[in-house]
Length: 278
Ligand code: SIN
Image (cartoon, rainbow, N blue to C red; front, top):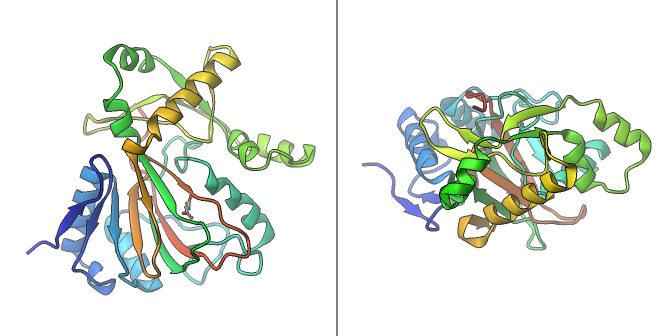
């Protein structure tokens, strides 16, 4: 018998219940997760208490798992998400302020990551919920004329655009270092291999190629506002031991702000991208 799947909102998110963290390390449980992910974009497992070893093993059943160059954990695939410099390092803590902005991971690369697994090791009620917005649903709900125009547009994505939103007071030296990170141009509308379409937006979206800067900025801001309206958003309030998996290719996500003193500590793995943006 498959484990019960309960939709969480009309357009985004479903909870799979009746399975423990260790039971997820199983081909059938992984296939259930992938199928639910395809349909709902975000899969929530409440209080499964998955160990780091099982998190890596389950991630491997879902796809190829990225190795983290920052070496933050004894498992090279695990990132530790915290703002506390004593639990991470000052540079990473500052970089993670960027997680407060709506974003899609890897939008500055030619093949954005396929998905992400995030589990709560420690929680803190003062902030730190995570929100997800379905850009499949947002695209589908647009008028046909808008869809036709958006399909002709290309967007330049840059690390600098995302960092500037998070750290507007950065020094010239910091800005220069962001500018050294290569940029990437992608179609605004991503037509996936399965025929579904989503919008590729978020903090990295810097300009519409060939448009005057202000006109492009205004379109990108308008589309982000459209895509993150409550109808397309799932807000997750974390309990210790929760595991959430999302389809990074069609879900924007952001953490709601929390302080560096927050107890909040997340362990995260990332699935390597399988599909170039087309
Ligand atoms: C992330 O943006 O990858 C992390 C989100 C979160 O900490 O809620």
